[in-house]
Image (cartoon, rainbow, N blue to C red; front, side):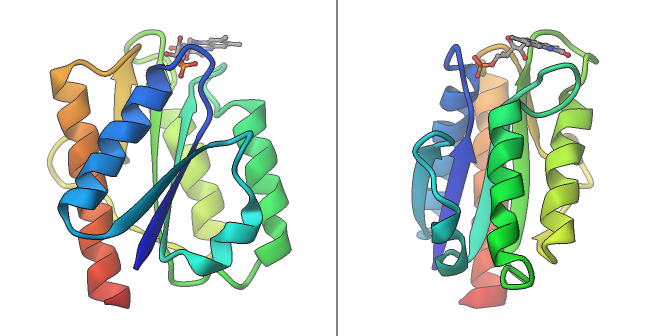
Length: 157
Ligand SMILES: Cc1cc2nc3c(=O)[nH]c(=O)nc-3n(C[C@H](O)[C@H](O)[C@H](O)COP(=O)(O)O)c2cc1C
């Protein structure tokens, strides 16, 4: 069982979130690979059981580089059905687009037929952080990783 985390980040805020998400996946005993979007290849997608996308918020949306990765994933359209998906984002402020950026990423994962689990408590759509993750946001990221790993084990273990 393996989870791939693909993130974009210019000033390392989202990168820090990516590593905290990875800690959560690892804590559940599931293998995880963290890749910056420039180094990631869609050719890895058929091999993984879960995909977590992370992006800085640019005008309420994921970055163009992250969107480019999503668009390249059309190569495996129909082949990612049933895999687990999730998303996280770092924004510059509160209520300034993190949730819309997360939802945009989740939309693409749903179109691939992936399974996306919401959260009934806080952070319903995924993990969001203003700037670099503080302790609370880092914990939210770890929890996201844990939930994805647990679902991967349930569906693919
Ligand atoms: C082109 C551009 C557009 C941005 N648009 C938004 C925005 O709509 N809302 C917001 O809260 N922050 C916005 N920001 C701020 C970034 O989302 C924020 O600084 C984020 O933490 C950067 O993440 P990174 O360090 O991983 O690159 C924008 C930044 C840039 C460069």
